Image (cartoon, rainbow, N blue to C red; front, side, top):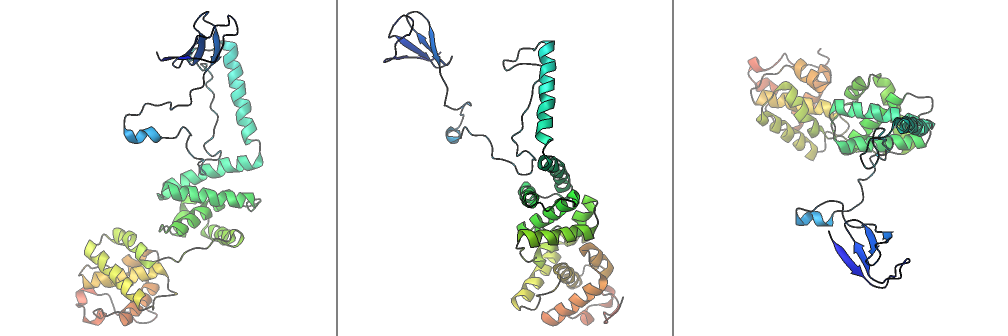
Length: 320
């Protein structure tokens, strides 16, 4: 027990000046008559520090979480015990259950809060399904809240807006997640999600960075089960093409697929055009056109000089 003797205070009952400050109990007690004069408020930390770095921790709680509909500032009711852990009586238990019910109803009574409760639940499910980090989830939640504050969601699908916000957050943070995958996981048509995404760009003024072809290489190579050497060679092909400034305006996925296909041929890993196109989510015609562009641009071994056992039929224009 930690006690301190203070001066300058007088007991209002007996007039004694011997005031004891009991820090552990949080009370100021008269040392003469035992009267509790006042209660103390402990402004120190409510934890024990085991390391020197823990001494400077703040008393404040965690920051607001945008991906939670109430920001993480929720109210919880313990309907069976009081603040001291003692069991409540039956009448008080019923009263606490009624208070809990009224509290939940008052929170979701607002239309915007009800919309957020549905949207944030769908956002959590969707981001978990496509495996994106928590920062992207919070950014998607911020974009959705901006759209909700501008009254853009009235009369439109909540799921489409959630999927569009997730795709926008992935684009802003450079996370390679195609729109088709996000739409498939959200169970909404790709056209609806794409239309909603364009609406977000127009009304919210979002500026999206350009997609780089190199970031699609690892995912496509993983689907094709290619070696690290082949993957790195494909990245070098794309970087060489970027230095010559001849790859602008092309689909980044098509370029990544073409670079991987050329790298497979040069590294003697046999993969068909159909397999590479399917892994990249593009068509074989697009793949052949991008391969022709890379052949004419880069100093790589022409397809005609590769052994026939490793090459598919000649890539003529319009071949299917």
